[in-house]
Length: 286
Ligand code: HXC
Ligand code: NAP
Image (cartoon, rainbow, N blue to C red; front, side):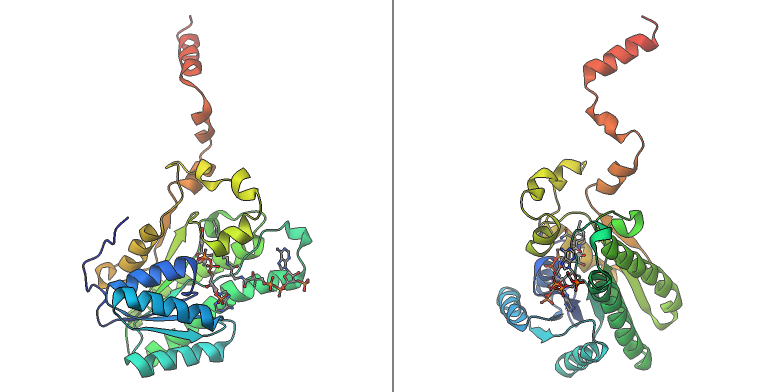
């Protein structure tokens, strides 16, 4: 559970992390800052961003700029990019991590409920990609996008349908722009995390005793949920120049969870050894 990259791996880079004040964004941002980058964290609640920026900066010794921004609003994103450039000279990468989600049978959702999730997740992400991409192209500057999706971006999932639809859209954008914008030296990759406990996700997706009843660790072949540093290591690598030839990839980090649900005979794990013995005897005609 330690940092993986060499000290100074992100020196001289400026990285914007959306939703960087809490949860996984805070964890990834903290590690990026430790690796030497100028970190910009952007989300709606300034008090939380300021507290996180102070915490990260005091640990890493590097500057962290908190900027309040609702990623549904294009002009606010342009203003984040401008402020980051004024402070640090340039922007090198955007980690699109901000999201909104809740759990509900789809037929209970109003169209406004659908909107609220899709607007944050898909619209917020394409807003940031468009604003940062145009800026890099205008300035003939290279750039890197790293987009946080989830494994149900490719499997789909009941009860989180707006989120699944939005994350699938982000994945399609990641792969599309990896090709279209490669000529501008802009790389696009994604990470699909399985369950990593955070207050934001757990309180909304596993409220009350659901966390106990549907304990994700029980569904994961490796028998545990993810550690934030494990995700931070992967994110730092994909944002660094060490991954310069990786473009258009989605890396799953879920302990084998989604494949466990997909494999036809994976539930046979529940069959005890004595039943396998009996089956073998039958097969041998005894
Ligand atoms: C059904 C709901 C609802 C719910 C809100 N609505 N919550 N419908 N079930 N649980 C409906 C409302 O009734 C309303 O529709 C519409 O949605 C908008 O409601 P608001 O009150 O404006 O929304 P609000 O509850 O204030 O905000 C929702 C939110 C908020 C924007 C999603 O929770 C938020 O800011 N979240 C950000 C953080 C977050 O969600 N983090 C988790 C990411 S986890 P009507 O018709 O009544 O007006 C994640 C994990 C993925 O993505 C994978 C895990 C393995
Ligand atoms: P979280 O702590 O709730 O993070 C969500 C962040 O998004 C918050 O910091 C929030 O800050 C920000 N945000 C929401 N709406 C915004 C808006 N309109 N404009 C700007 N920022 C906004 O949850 P998390 O678990 O760390 O999730 C982080 C990412 O990981 C998400 O993309 C999520 O889908 C993904 N993910 C999480 C898990 C998991 O198990 N935790 C698994 C798979 C994928 P404000 O409220 O201050 O705006």
